[in-house]
Length: 105
Figure 1 (cartoon, rainbow, N blue to C red):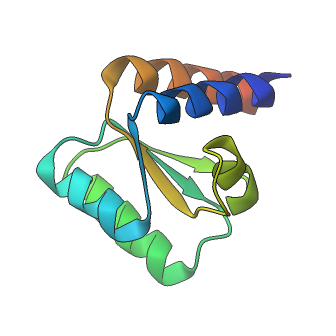
Figure 2: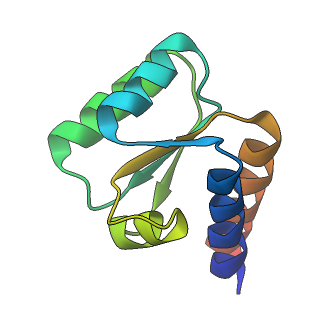
């Protein structure tokens, strides 16, 4: 149930144009300080994972892991996506809360 809630919220954020997807575009948003939360797929390549984690750690951007790229892509109505970022504080906080609940609930 909780997975449906965060997937729905991510879809809503995407329709509000507060979601950026794709490795290079996400890294650009992190560098510019506009990324509020980065969602990274667990099945990303080691190189992509390291690059995104290092950039997020350096710029102190929160990062959360998602089970797989299909879920991430489906949530925003696109093909499989390895990494997405939210550019809105409200969406980022709520999504982070829902993902924490789904991990422990």
